[in-house]
Length: 398
Image 1: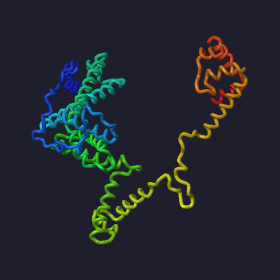
Image 2: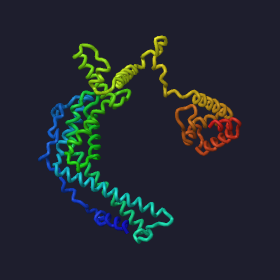
Image 3: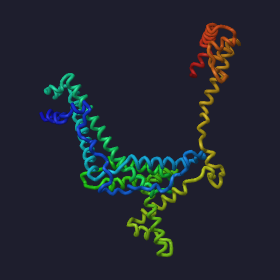
Image 4: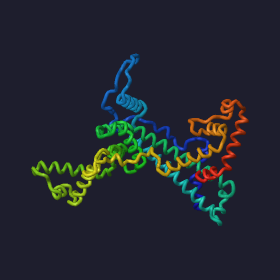
């Protein structure tokens, strides 16, 4: 009976779910402003002023940059008027309810999975419980599935509240990474993905502020974006990080020693082995040397460029071109078996050697006969083609 009791615990408010009544009063968790909550970037500055102009004055055509800035300005204005910060108490309550909804949905899915496994057995142990028999079981599983979907939907809605209330934090972090190859709009987009990841991973029981936790995920997403999106050859981000550390230490030691430092000296400063330093330097050098222009000659002896060996995808393969030419020749041989009138009608009907096809009525008007007569001539010509030896050969090609 443990299983029966477990199921009973999951369905006390099923009638409320089906009638549309909420289980928890989530609407009470309104955005309460920034009282007691000092989120970085709350009063953010986009870093530039949008273009101004009179409303009634005819404006010149916007450039791509002006349009980009205008869209950003609209986005900032929407955030300013439609989003507000959550207080620490609201953060805690909403995060707790997100976890509760996810746990209940997971518990219901586990029970439904268990019922499905048991009912698939020849000797089901669930037959002893009346709730699992006949149409009652099907109805019960449908109601439980509906309940699970309701919990999942509420969890998503609460997560969206978290995300919307912290979009300004993304902007304040993304501004610090401008000028690294990606426009601000793309950096904000990547930061929003990091924010969504932070909402998924946030554990309110640890006692940390969400903004502190989310900042790490946002910074990681925004920092990695230029390396992953702007390079012709994608290189792991950790390699860029280590190459930057090696370069910084090399510059520092060069000033101190007044000479180029050795790999051993760099390794000692970084706390890694000299072999790792050599591998980092060599890898970075190989990447830079391997990025070549398509106009670069293959070698000193062969002055042909790399672009001459790039495949032209618009040109069909040789076998395809040969087959196409063969079929065209056979079609001409077949048409030679027909009378001039039949040949012209077949060409017009199927667009052979011309750019378009014609209907029976259009061909009839051309020859001054009815569409039915054209249909009869077409049928006779096709039968003549089908019975010929060339028709059999063409059928094998197709």
